Image 1 (cartoon, one colour):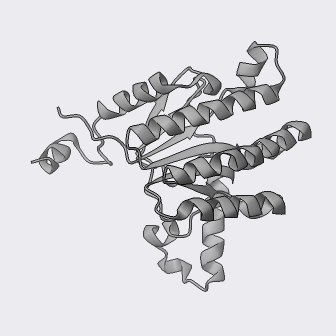
Image 2 (spheres, rainbow, N blue to C red):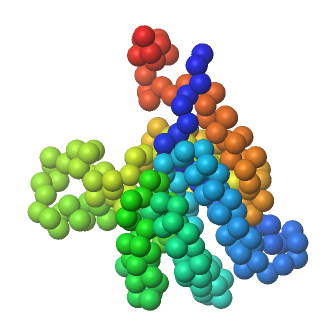
Length: 240
């Protein structure tokens, strides 16, 4: 059996920052800061291996229920990281995108995100998509609301038209979804887009996630057969 080609789009549920900090008797924010370094490693690994799109689950709509000081620290980290990394991303031809209910973030952060997206959009050859204030269920609800607001006949709605109104519009569906910290659930992430994604779970906590973990996930993906609901013999016939 021949190996699958490398995935075009990888999505990662970055889990384990708080556990990493707790195991070291550190404040939770230190786990999130260590997680920023893991983002750099993952983005570099994806870039070196020719992955065109990398989506990272940074902050969910449910994360607002965390302690206010932790949420405030996370928002400051987002802002600081964008400011520090945007020029390097632009130099390397990596477009920075954001998916989620961006309008609910602070005006200052929204403006910074918009400027970063515009700054990196020119001549981009790869995309780093950050899912922030993101929830898969509300994404589908928002898409339907947007269509209704446009006067669309929802009785004639099809999958392609709905997909064109998701936060991730214009991006391919993820071929591979990676989750760290040993958890085995989607946690409301890319519910529509991950319908036929392959999954890889690793016990590695996100701040410890590195190149070897990335390659392990890629190797596991490339050993699989993607059926998309077809019977095995139909897959064989497609390859002839």
